[in-house]
Image (cartoon, rainbow, N blue to C red; front, side):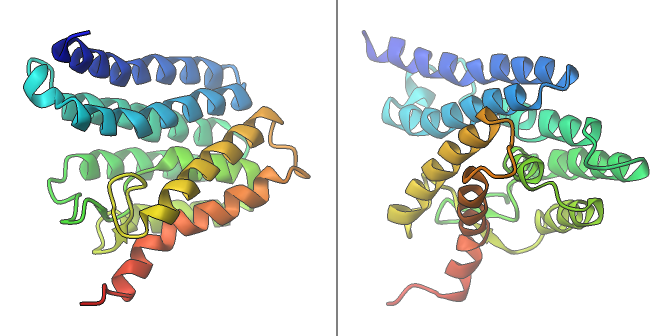
Length: 230
């Protein structure tokens, strides 16, 4: 396979996320939440590997007719924001007006964040919460907290999108990557497990999800608090 063919295949891999987003949406319309999240976990895994592959085969130079960055943002908005927001709205977790508030906050704030040219830091982390609502909503489905807690979490994370807070990229943030990357893989494993058992309340997957989510959420802030030694 030529280098150009390999580069084009990476674009196709990225674009497959749109298919997974549609499959997740179709499942969500029928209230098949476990199936929906399984498709989102697959999309999350693809999103985790297509970036390193794109850099390895230099898709910007070897297949420049397709904008990989734009394609990735489109897929991310579908799988990270749009489908999870719809699921949260359509579920029984947020009654009445609270569901409307959540879906408006998530979609509007995320659209602005995804267009923000300052979203990446110099060390390839994210400046502000990176709109990973697929992860947030999956944990909320697993834990099923009170709707006031859900609304508070949504509001705080939406505000955190535009605060000078650092959030690690599991693959590209070099500092603590030896821990961050395994934590992201652990989160993916437990997310798939939780969805597979239909979010059974006694599943050990919930504990694994909670621990790995807390690390991924606060690791960047910890790096800001604990600067590198000279």
